Image 1: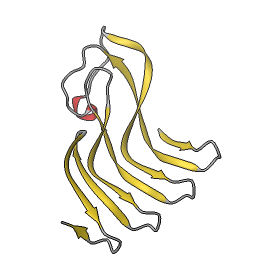
Image 2 (image 1 turned 180 degrees about the vertical axis):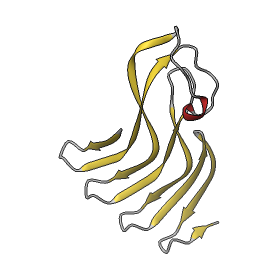
Image 3 (image 1 turned 90 degrees about the vertical axis):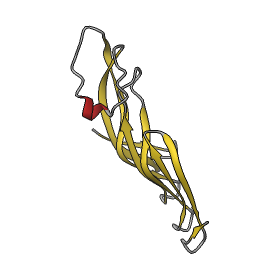
Length: 121
């Protein structure tokens, strides 16, 4: 299901895909939920939960893109959404500020960029 969140003043805050899940106390493989193909079981808790998955975009109140990246949903108890892959954040002028590489929520690498989008070593 595609989802949008707004600031209290009405401007778009973020947008992306939500995955509807049933929480389960038997979870724990640590794999991405889409890969695990968990089926309904006697330990599942009634009620749905929604988790961010796939590409999400975040905006400031002026409508400018400030961050973009991907979430994966992992098969753990409470079923967390974790950042995965390259997440980019941007300055107010639209230039790239930072890129962070995640592996299922763990930071692998952080790169900072100058005003000309050149990576700073």
